[in-house]
Image 1 (cartoon, rainbow, N blue to C red):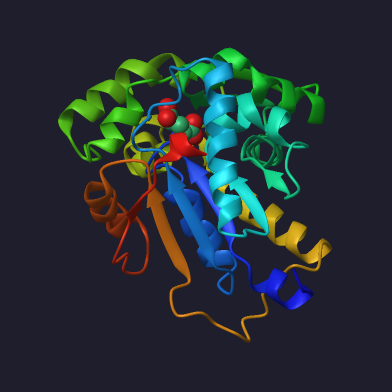
Image 2: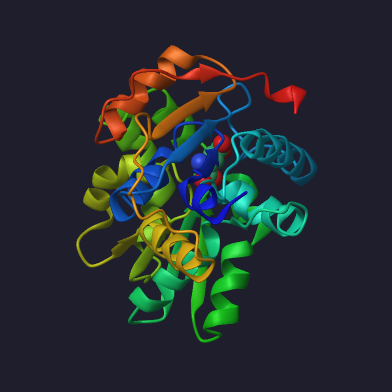
Amino acid sequence: MSTDSRKRAPIGVFDSGVGGLTVAREIARQLPNENIVYFGDTARVPYGSKSQNTIIRFSEQIIRFLKTKEVKAIVIACNTASALALDAVHNEFDVPVMGVVIPGARAAVEATQNRRVGVIGTDATVQSGMYTKVIQSMAPDVTVVEKACPLFVPLVEEGFKDHVVTREVIEYYLESMRDSGIDALILGCTHYPLLRSKIREYMGEKIQIVNPAYETAMDLKKLLYEEKMENDGSTREHSRYSFYVSDAAEKFRRFANTVMPFDVPTTNVVNIEEY
Ligand code: DGL
């Protein structure tokens, strides 16, 4: 690939479903010249209840698919796949792959004053203990309290953002977290920023809510700069953002239109098992 076509190549972004849109949205905001190919694994969501081997296999298939779109870098916009598959896939492909856990951990270490950080995520992410490991490798004096909130993902996928049931589930999961003395809480699942205002309301103003998406987009910007792969925007394509899913394209498209700051006119279905 020539240097120019490499610069114009899209960024691949993937998640188990709609959650990664919160990261794609931030990338679009911070890197407005970049093209994005998004893949949501809607046929196989949730990842949070699956084994590490399965999550690695799914991630490999999606990376192989994204490579057919000639992406220049891949962002695993899923904490579960970042925690369980990034190490395995990192050196397997000839394209840079980054996750959301390291940026999220760094943001929380910077945010906490009292050195007590909370992390909420899927069962798989919390069981992996990856956030605790990464945070303590950056700042050994920080205590980390982790809590799995598995029902948040289906609530988000079903569009229950403002539902009374969601408020009750938030209270059920987060009561002990609220009383644990933390002053920063990582939304360690990319679906959770879609519940941010309700979580914020419940946790109160004193606890900083950390969304790893912001820091992830910053890290991506740095990577593109260092690798001289930034798109300078001189050759804007007509359709700069494309969306693929493994099932239920129309439901995804409607959801994407509530998250992204621009119109998502089409979503394409891919048979991901073929990759
Ligand atoms: N959004 C994903 C994450 O960040 C995965 C949720 C799931 O599929 O369980 O962990």
